[in-house]
Image (cartoon, rainbow, N blue to C red):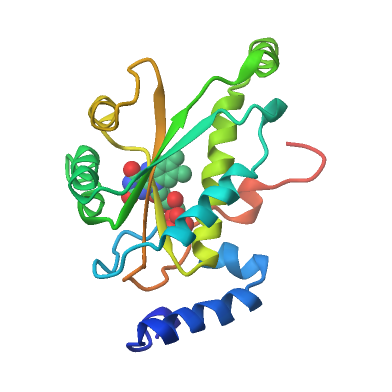
Length: 202
Ligand SMILES: Cc1cc2nc3c(=O)[nH]c(=O)nc-3n(C[C@H](O)[C@H](O)[C@H](O)COP(=O)(O)O)c2cc1C
């Protein structure tokens, strides 16, 4: 059985267990363990210090010209959160968002002159790359803290902007749901190595 589900633990021993695990977690293990969790223990809130560690990990992530073109909005108010969750749940998608213990919205911010010029001259969407990396930092840090996350790109952006007071001119590339996972580790379905990697030639 997956070690996450190997039996009930008290809150204190849970915390201790997670700390012990963190000490030992190698990067390879972290990458293996990170997965999209779509079921959370609804009785456990995400602790403030853990949220802020995830935010700090995102803050330290790299970006083109160090533009840091993001703002993270943590939706902490339960009613507002379920409304944001509902904006992601339609056409049978993303129902789990409605009850997720925490939702974080990533807002795309200005990337600064250098990055804008670079994006145009080199025809690259640096801002989206930057936000993707920051989101990954966030999620990997969450995993290291025993939390589960899911990046969510399917949602009614207009509705979320309205709910969170985000100006209409801004974009929200992603929401991230966060909570203590209540589902087992699943296998990673991935392309074979030879489909996604080659040496010297395409
Ligand atoms: C940009 C982006 C958007 C995503 N949007 C959704 C989504 O709307 N709903 C969802 O359940 N999962 C979403 N995912 C999660 C992917 O389905 C998941 O990462 C992929 O299937 C690989 O599984 P894993 O994360 O468990 O390894 C998204 C992931 C990314 C990176």
